[in-house]
Image (cartoon, rainbow, N blue to C red; front, side):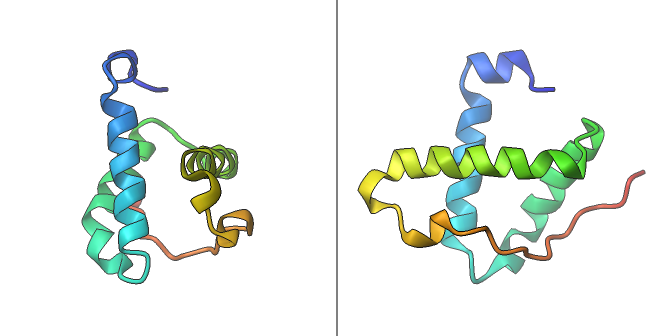
Length: 92
């Protein structure tokens, strides 16, 4: 599913980290991320990512964020993430 070159040269992890930072920086202004979220949604659709795959990815992503933040991780990271309505393009 992941592009091997993007994994080996670090571009995918850098994009993911930048996306997490942008999301965290704009958590109360998600409308500012609509274009980026739509682009990510289209990419996921093209790769046939299924909705049932998101919870496991989210679990491990939050685990990685907690590891990086260490003691700076807030208690909210341990709670179930709130469901937000994000723009996802229709399948074409």
